[in-house]
Length: 246
Image 1 (cartoon, rainbow, N blue to C red):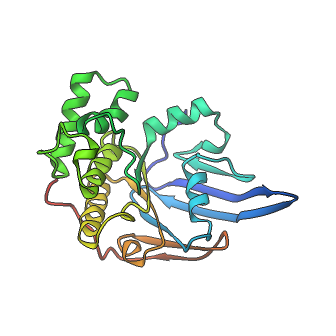
Image 2: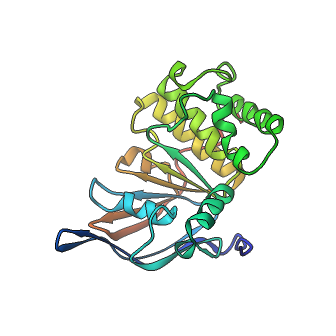
């Protein structure tokens, strides 16, 4: 695998991406020749309404689906050309995910859930669980270390999800509607936390949302309509910072 690009190079390069799906005798075009560069350390929002193509685009960027045409590179690696085993290894070492539905394993404690990315990297159990406990303390869950997901509120589960996404210091964290199931107060706390970690460790965030309030946390807003980029706005940072728990 190639060495990561220097910080001044685009971390993510999207070249002429097109995605088609068969629908009976017809073909649905979900993405139409998208080109985009995303820099290391950028908080980039993929913004659009339902059906705009934003979730399909996220799947291409994260290697969950292969494009019909075109190429995605992360750190110089053409992920759209990797096989499933290579993709799995790449995700373990370079990508993190924050999900709307939290996706914590119900039979594992908060500590065990957060430690999973380090387990996949082969980190010894004692070391990874110590790191997980530190991360949980940083996101304000020092009192939930040994609790199962069913014993935590939605906001607490998402905090654990953030700790899991960032524990291995991935190059890119994908956040797909990360506050969709949360109230407005918890939404602010979660977004401040995600942005704080990203800026502290100079990580790239790909935030997918239909919510203008969430998009306001991004440095850059890429708007999709009907599978095409219709605007690409770079903004000054107005929201988000390093949370006090860090």
